[in-house]
Amino acid sequence: MSPIFLMSLLFGLTFGQAMSFCAPTEYIIHVEKRECAYCLAINTTICAGFCMTRDSNGKKLLLKSALSQDVCTYKDLVYRTVVLPGCPRHIVPYYSYPVATNCKCGKCNTDYSDCIHETVRTDYCTKPQKSYNV
Image (cartoon, rainbow, N blue to C red; front, side, top):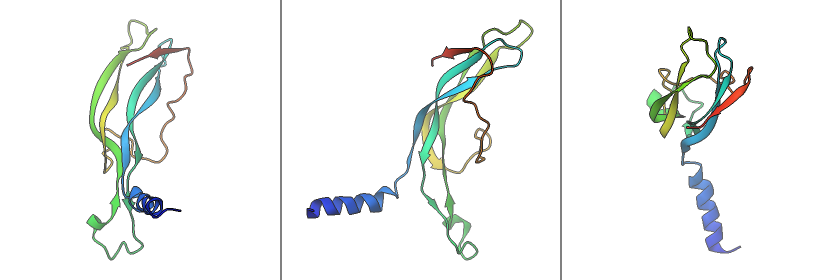
């Protein structure tokens, strides 16, 4: 094994873990209303990826600022609105959803993110499906 290859491998293993890989990722959400006839499959982007986390067994000895529990979250986002097909006239057919334009590693903000481990599944429809491409 050449010394250059060995150094590259060692460098990658050492510093590769220190880097975060948090970026907008394509995702399909399925949206439906009980009163409407169809489910809408929406192609959007969400923030996903790896963020460095530091935790210590000596939590009581360290300042809170020394501990880091960052998640991949929105830095910039826009909201788009779609019309759900097959809704009766008395039902508001609009649905707004976030589109990630830029992501960051940071604290989870419950104002616009679901910060729990298990989320509600949105990868299925109970009604006939229509696609909506952003």
